[in-house]
Length: 76
Length: 176
Figure (cartoon, rainbow over the protein chains, first blue to last red):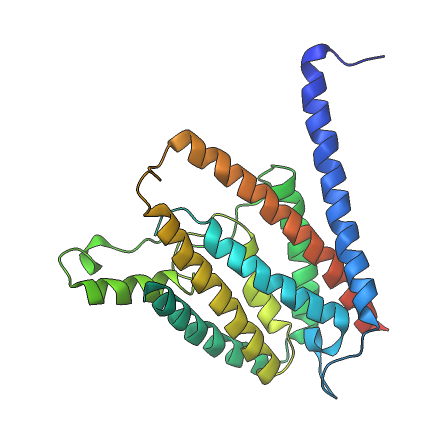
């Protein structure tokens, strides 16, 4: 049974959003797994510095900071 | 000049915060917090929902601090407040993740270095955004601003979900 015509774009948008969200999580997990074996940081390091996956999180946080700074419109 | 002023004040402020947070034994709980925060707000923003308000302040710079003052003083006020990003309105949830990520870095050197990099990135991005908005012809069309902010919110949500995935992997890896 097909959805009414007016609901189809909304369903398509929701499907697209769900696919994008799933892909984003999968990309993060893949990145973490790919880097997790790439040697820890300095001896005795803890937290993000202790693993490749943690270093990936740190690098993504820096990119997120740049995007957050640049995305703000003029609203001090 | 303005870009370096914004970046410098942001680096100094964030590095100081990093030194404080890095000295506290917060790495493990903060990493779990990063994972949960990124997953929750990533879903919220990417799905276009508002299940919880974005953490932050609505405080804005009082006009008395900048009106009728010298250009140098205005630059000092703007760069000190806008560069680090703590005392200004942050419309997207991504900014709230950053202090938790710094706390999760583990140790003073790592936390201070990560915080300084975050400050440099945010301060430079903020200064470049102001330069972008000051261009002639970049007049604010309210509808366009709303659309652009929706796109940024979705992008912020997707970026948070990528971070959630990587942080979850790091959490699992450190619990073994």
